[in-house]
Length: 267
Image (cartoon, rainbow, N blue to C red):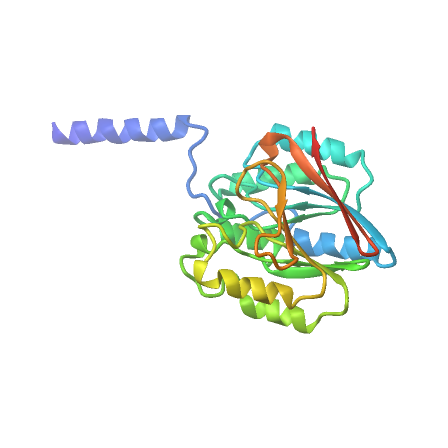
C-alpha cells in the first residue's frame, strides 16, 4: 500500500512538472548562447563613431524590469531620433533570471544606436551578477566619447552583501589618475544616499568622484520616482535621476563646450 501511494505521488509530481511550461531547472546555466561582451562591442562602436566630435547627444533609460512593451516603445522612438548612443541605468530584470536577461537583450538588439547596460540591484539577485558579467562584461568600466569621459560604476552594495569593493573606490582612483581633461559623467544605478548603497562609503565616494575631473555630472536610476536632478552634497556635482520605463520617460542629454542640455521626454 505504501509503495502504491509513493508511486502515485511520484507520477503526479512528474506530470505536474512536465505540464508546466514555466518550470525552470535552474535560473542560471553555464552556457549562454548569442551575443556576449555587448558593452565592450558597443563602446568600440561609440568611440569610433564619436572620436572627433565636439558635441554629443545621448538618451538615458532605466529600470525596465521586464516591462517589454514600454521598452519596445522607447526603443522605437529613440531609433527615430538623433542620438549617438543609449545608456540603460540598470534593473533590466526583476529576479536576475537568465530568461529576463535574454529577453531584454533581444529587445535591446532592436536599438539602432549602440547601447550600454549598467548593472542594477535586481540584476544581481541569485546568479544575476554572473549572467550580467557573461553577457555584458565587468560592471566597472569607462569609455570616452568626444569631449566626455563616462565612468560606469557598480554601486549595488546591498546585493554584494557587504563586499568592501562595492563601490570600488580603488577603481575610481585609477580613473582619476587617468584624467585627461575631459568632462566626466559618472553612471550608476544606486545613488550614494540610498539605503542600498554602503553608508560607510557615502562621503568618501563623494570626495573620490570629485577627483575624477573639474566638471563632473552623475546619472542614476533605481528609485522609480519622476525625473529630477539635485546637487545633493552641495559640491557642484549634479545628480540626474531617470525613472522606471513603466513611467514612460526617457532622458536626453546634449553636451558641448561647457554646456549640458538636459530634457525629460514623456512618451
